[in-house]
Length: 151
Image (cartoon, rainbow, N blue to C red):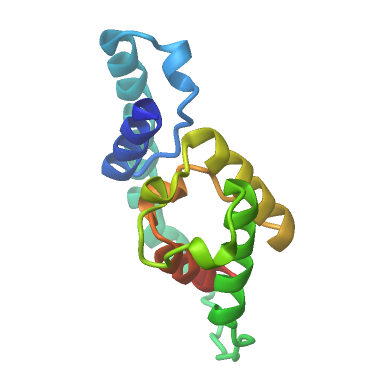
């Protein structure tokens, strides 16, 4: 669990999407540091190329006209109910026992059940959310708002 939290913090800090399983590939601090340095140096090279070529591309490629379209309204209440029911199922509790602003960890959600729950959410909505998002959005209300944004 701590490893997942640590990788999640690294990902947020550097804007990466490293999976927690990389800790098994790079089991020492030195190995992980070298791996991160390699990834970050590649990103810097790509960013430098993009920065240099972007003005040229903008001059050569006509910019599309933006049109405003209204996206269908997402029902956050419905999302919250689906999440609550699926969480209750994963924790083997009644949905009424789920406190919407209580942290998942305090509700009894561990990393293994979290992965199972996120898989159920992904199947329901046709998404590919990583279980580490539970650390970014640690309550039912926060996760509901996140899903409302991406749906």
